[in-house]
Length: 373
Image (cartoon, rainbow, N blue to C red; front, top):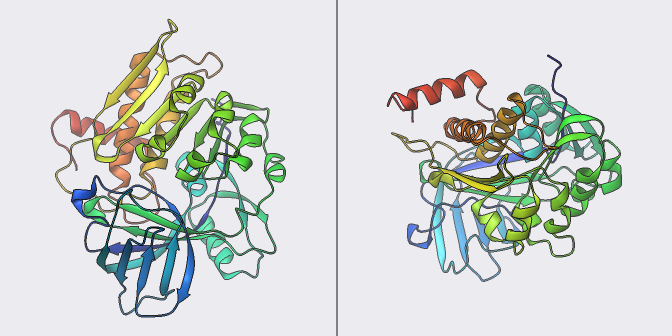
């Protein structure tokens, strides 16, 4: 069988991961966070980190003695949750640097070629990112943006409480020319566009040559009114996002009607998939998250694991995006495997993804009531 050609367009950056000692928001304010926002420094220095949203809600984090920095006050582009008030105090239990970015995640999970931006070769963060990509054997086509440093993210995670709250500090990817990116799009079996702006994503999704196009948006994509997701929907075969991202989209019904497959994850509540049956009717399939006997270690990368395995399973069983329909038994299998991949990856503390054999073994254990979670 011919090896599948997978192209991935999306960011690879440095994650400075901070594990905190409690939920990021009080449990009375809703389910665990799975939301990314942008940040900018209001001031540098001080004893720890303070994250302040536009309404004044503050998350204060006491950092450990070996914290390498930075320290200070960060302005958040939006609130972690509407109506959050007051001051939330947390203590960092540990930290480490890791490979981040949806582009890096999808490329590693699917063995695809990643095209993403880096700053100049003299930029220390770009050097670190390049080294991490090489360590994880990600085939990489770097596009150098010489007047911007590499992106990095302050990734706050609460481990067993289930929160993931990335605060992104944007550099080279935001400055990357959309038409330059699209010039690298070639013939492929699967093209993934993830974590880029809508302006950058649109030419990649409409470029010829891809048999299947998967779009994995962030909250910024869903809130973009200048270049709305609806304008790109007809060029998307599979759209995967989380519930908070989907809820932020004003044109949900129209988008769901235009894309072939819509998958929305909801953390511990599982996921649902909307798709078209062979008779032309629309179907919705829902499934709970796999049962666990212990809390997650880190919810980072769960979205990429879910989406990658969902589309991989469909393609492995001959799904043809040109027809746009899916047998319900195949979609059930794809959804089950995707949820198992998500359950496995949140038990990892560092960058990496489960193998197909590990996913199969986990599903077999679940069926025989020997749940490994």
